[in-house]
Length: 168
Length: 318
Image (cartoon, rainbow over all chains, first blue to last red; front, side):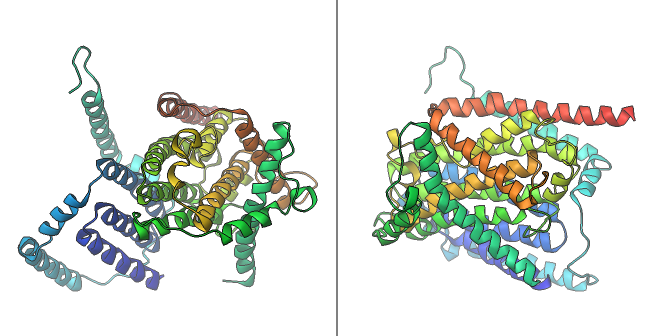
C-alpha cells in the first residue's frame, strides 16, 4: 500500500509538472486528468475510498471533460502554441518559480518538524462520510448548495436570450 | 492473491471479450430476424464463423494514421474505451464468489469508469483533425455528460433501498423482491441512460452515418476501429449486466446455478437492446439534449425523493 501511495504521488507530481509545461492546451488537459486520477489513487491508499471515487467521477470524469469540450470548441491553433511558448520563457517564470520554491522548502521543513504519521490512517465507509456531511457539517453543505444555486441562476440569466433584442 | 482470484480475473476477461466478439454475429442475426431477412449465414453453420472472418479482415487491413492527426492522442483514444469498460467489469458480481473485486463503492466505481470512457470518443474525434469527427465528438461529449448526470441519479433509489454501494449487497437485498418492481422508474431511466452511454441507436448521434459519415471514428481503420467497435459491444454487455445486478436480482433464481441465471438475464437484456436498435429511429440532436435535461433529470430527482420518502415513512410506521 505504501509503495502504491508513493508511486501514485510521483505520477501526480510529474503529470502536474507536464500540465504546466505543455504548449498544446489539449495535451496539458490530458496530463491534468492523469494527475487527478493519480490523486484519486492517493486518496484510495490513504483509506478515503469514497473521496477517491468522487474524484474520478466529478473531476476527471465531468469537469475535465467540460474543459476539453470548451478547448475543442475554441479550436486553438498554432497561434496559441506560439503564445504559450512566449509565456514559458525563463524570464516569465523565474521570479514566481523562485518564490514558490522558497514556500515549498518552508513547507517541507515544517512537515519534517511535524510528528510522523503512517500513510494508512483509517478506512472511511461512504455512510460515515454521509453522516458527517449531514450532521456536524450541515451548514457547510447548505452554504455550498446555495452558492451553486446562485451560479445556476446566474448562468441561466446570462445564457437566456432577451425577447426583442437581436443577437450580436 | 490466491489462485482462485487469478482464475476469476482471467475468466471474466476472456469470457467478456469472447462474448463481445460473439455479439457481433448475434446482433446481426437478431436484427435480420426482426427485419425479415437472413443476415450473415455463409461462414460456417448458421454463419457463426462470421466473427472469425471479420477478425481476419480487420487484422489484415492497413492500419493508417492520417498525417494531419495528433498521433499520440489518436493512438491512445481507442484503447481508453476498451480499458475503462473492462475495468468496470471488475465490480460486477456474476455469482456468489465470482467477482474480481467486491468494492464497497462498487456503483461509484462503475459510474467513474463509464464517465472516463467519454474521453475515448472525444479524443478520438478531436485527434483525427477532421470536421466530421470533430462534430461527432462534440456531440458525444455533450450527450454523454448530460446522460451521465441522471444515470447516477437513477441508481440512487436502488442504493437507498439496499443501503449499500456494494453490488453483492444490492443483489442480496433483492432476495424477496427484485428492485425492478419498486424501482420501475429507476430501471427505465437507467436503461435509457445506459443506451445513451454506450452510444447505441437511438442515441448513436456521435457517429450517425447519414449525416456525419461515421462521426468520431471516421479516420480510424484496422484494429483501432475494431477497438471502438468492440468497446461498444463491451459497453452493451456492461450495461446489461449492471441492469441485471441492480434491478433484476443478479444471480438469484430457482433451480439453475447462479451463473446461469446471471447469463440468462443479461442475454435477455442484450436481445432487448438489439430489438430497440431494430425498431427505433434516430432523433435530432437538440431533441436528445432537451429530452435528457428537461424530462429525464426531473424524473430521476422525483424518483429519489419518492423513494426516500417511502423508506422514511416505512421506518416511521414500525
